[in-house]
Amino acid sequence: MLEGDRVATVDRRGKYIVIRLASGRALLVHLRMTGGFRYSPASHERAVLTLDDGARIAYRDLRRFGTWELLEAEDAEEHLSIRLGPEPLERGFTTRFLAERLAERKAPVKAAILDQRTVAGLGNIYADEALWRAKINPSREAETLTAEEVAALHKGIRDALKTGIRYQGADLGDGAYAGGRMQERFRVYGREGDPCERCGTPIEKTRVGGRGTSYCPSCQAARSSSSRPSASRRRNSV
Image 1: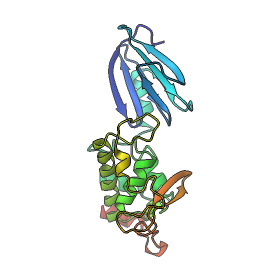
Image 2: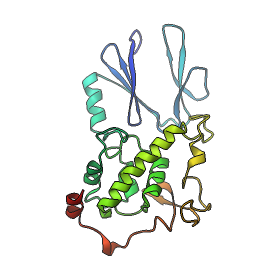
Image 3: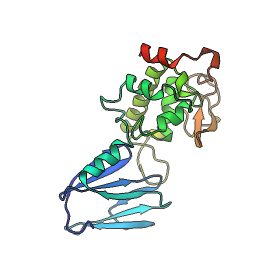
Image 4: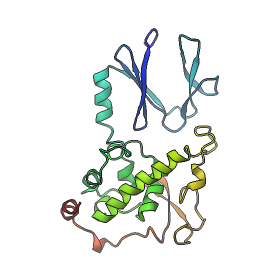
């Protein structure tokens, strides 16, 4: 029950909204694909929080994928720590950490960086944008990346997210980031058939790890398996 409790702080950890309460408990909200909060009445309301000043905050979720979990403080911290890696724009997300997470993983590199234990909060759009910046094919086995490519990917992730923040997210017409302009800065996402801004080759779309994936087949060309570095050599070189 939330009735009578007070909101102490509202934080974010990865894709979770963390509402810490005066009682010491924490409400963890994961919006998934279509969840969101609105001050005014909204369609597809799933829950409503009424504050003591009369404010009405509605949680809407068209596809009902979002989750709410009310946990004691220590349980909330454990819940987050086992599911999430470091925040990509904070000091804990280093090139070395990324190299260690990718080492000996045969999964496609895109799937590996979408694993929230590798990069907390990274989603499908920004994974595509980061891989384009790093000139890495999304289907490459993660363990085949060289030290230089891991460093480029680390920078690409940060640069893509910083650009998204600068332009206040992408307005994709669902109201989540109304007024955002990141969609004007996409290099591959949603641009299949358009020329790559780097080499002019038409952008293609495929599926990697079950996710729609946009990439340049020329400057993100797949690497030959014969040139794979060993995982131990790559770790030693980072």
